[in-house]
Amino acid sequence: MTSTTFTVERGRVRMFARAIGEHGTVHDDLAVARAAGHPDLLVPPTFFFTAEIEEPDAFAFVADHGVGPDETILHGEQRFDYRAPVHAGDVLEIVPGESTATAKKGGALLLLERSTVFLRDGQEVARSMTLLVVPREVAPA
Amino acid sequence: MRPGEVLEPFSLPPVTRTTLALFAGASGDHNPIHVDLDFAREAGYDDVFAHGMLSMAWLGRALESWVGPERIRSFGVRFVHLTHVGDVPTCRATVRSVAADRETAELDLEVVLADGTVTLAGHATVDIPVSRSGGETA
Image (cartoon, rainbow over all chains, first blue to last red; front, side, top):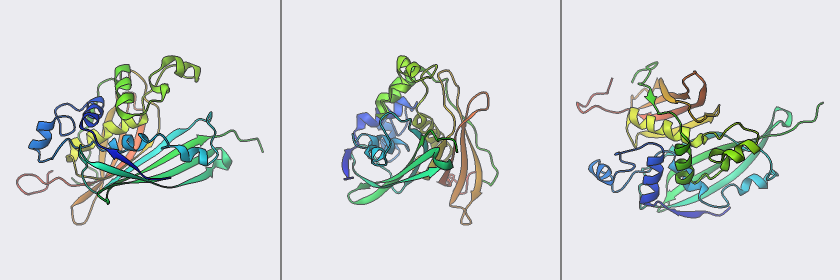
């Protein structure tokens, strides 16, 4: 569970923004972003999840909690907290936190929760929380 | 913003397979369940379905349309129901409360389909926009 570095590329921000329907905004148009006082394209609010899953081992913690490769894993909840705007050209350090596993409904659901902190020049700019839900067969009582 | 105020709904076009393919590439979520019909059928679904994070991204656009970029302090959702190709999502918000200093507001958020199905339910804390005249916007 080591931290990784993610460079926020302008083309990636624009591609992400256009894929969610942004056209001519601070997220996909450099002239619009600069006119609004931004040094470069502003990352959209949920772009941090994309930065997070870029790391190939981003979900290694799931297996660490005994979830098998063939089990169904659902994205139950997602949350972001923002401290400072992030722009194309920034270099982020992505620091995964400890993950927790909690059994619910008599073991019919396994909830996996993990928080991640995003740093720029050592200062926190955002953090995310992901809750994954693993439905499981429960033997009748 | 006032408690109980309902913000202008943010409408989205019908979900297309092209949108899902573009978001798969752009977001880095390459799970074939969202883009590969053969894979989806083998997994027991009738068709591919949208990424949950795509709906959250739309809700993020809606939030920025309501309060402006850089005014979102926190933003969280529960993924409640799948979104399918052809669905027409709309993002909605209701002001739950306004801080005593009137600098921040708590918003209840949801993404709903044309038939009323709620696909995402969420919450955000936002900085309240200030109008150019210096007063608070209505």
